[in-house]
Amino acid sequence: MSKRLLVLISVLLALAILFTGCSSPSTDEGDKNSNGTPGGQTTGKKILRTNNSSEPGSLDPALAQGTHESWILENVFEGLMTFDENGNLVEGMAESYEVSDDGLTYTFKLRDGIKWTNGDPVTAHDFEYSWKRALAPETAANYASILYYIKGAEDYNTGKASADDVAVKALDDKTLEVTLEAPTAYFLELTAFYTYFPVNKNVAESNPDWAKDPSTYVSNGPFKLVEWKHNDQVILEKNPDYYNADKIKLDGIDLDILEDQNTAWQKYQGGEYDLLVDVPTSVVNELKTKNDPQLQIGLQVGTYYYNVNPKVKPFNNAKVRKGLALALDRETIVEKITMGGQIPATGVVPPGMKDENGNDFRESVGDLIKYDPAEAKKLFEEGLAEEGMTVEDFNKQGFVLLYNTSESHKKIAQAAQEMWRTTLGIEIGLENVEFQVKLNREQSGDYQISRAGWIGDFMDPMTFLDLWWSDSAFNDVKYNNPEYDALIRQAKSTNDQNVRMKAMKEAEKMLMKDMPVIPVYFYTQPYTVKPNVTGIIKVPVRYPIITYADITG
Image (cartoon, rainbow, N blue to C red; front, side, top):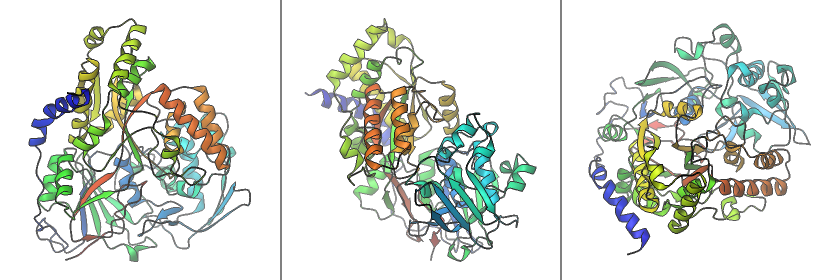
């Protein structure tokens, strides 16, 4: 019997009880609708009901750091650019823009009549203020680095310059001028990202806690925040003053905050939700098998991976990390556990992004990681020996794999646990916590191995490779390789695609040689939608766009 088959049998046995405990899908179409049958919508209003799965850490665009916040923010705010009802990148708050011949200076003209939800006009001064506010060291914005494309932004954020040195300026109420450090092909797409959203200058300056309470919350998007019951529910209502309000069919969006996937699925089955994004893996598989039209497999540019804390011995040893990586049978994970069309990860950059020749970047770089149990065991034991440890010593440490509460993450973690036990002879415990708790622990270094994932912010390999630049706020493994940093800076400093792509290809190979993180699979995004819901759009760098949804019947 092959080693791989032995591992597969062990994994399936370990998961058997868990699989049988999951809810099974229903083909019942007696779902709630705008007339209130069943599901409680008795007002006649079109309210889209769904689940956000995790409590937001902050609904201030400058402080947000994940999809549990961005999915809400993308409905209550809007940037200079946005995605329309067809998933195309289009002008948002900006009516038009011009780009200088050298590709460095962008001049945006704002629309007439755009307003904040408190009635104030949205101005170019709000944008200048907001971007500089996100960069201000005292704001401590985790995502400030995504603004570093602007000339002077990094120096201001790192305390080497002042706000006046940041090359974003409101020329008047309706004109914003931005100068970049280097030509950036995807800058327009960046202005649709939540860190680039404006906030109301007068409100933010007068009340630092404006974003914590719906009664003081002011935004500029198609919906407005009217209620936030922490760890329970977020309620949005249509913003009648939004310039594009005639295209918004929903009267509101109700988002529960519920981490348990099975309970959320039961609510969807019972007609309490119109849409569910975080669907249990066993349900996804059964719906796929039945070709159930409620299941959508959305395109997603993202990577599921494990952080390995190099501050904890023996994970400081690259051979130990690589041994863990080579011991994972990714084919088994995606075929037998996730079952949502995911792709085994062969690097950190997922398919879907183009290189300098228009070819897929992932295919151009090739496979940088594989399943090789013999090599995994060899490297792992060599690494342990270099650190003065044996497998027995390792097992005495009580190391733990940390993951955020989710049935899917649990099953994947159990599979990895079993694969490491079978191939390497090691025992790794499992610990689940709330998503925000996990993020906080990763940032403070309070973990040994942790589950992580990244959804691209824009359609370029840099959206992934930039994560492990030494100064990145999301570099939870504190990877610090000057050669890697130099390649990232080189790729950012030019618009020459040949130079950029060569640098990024070398950077990914270097990263996978050092293996500070262990890629597991490339995402898809399975989600379910009731038959009477239309207009939900999926673009690869966003959660399903629900802004233009409609409920019929």
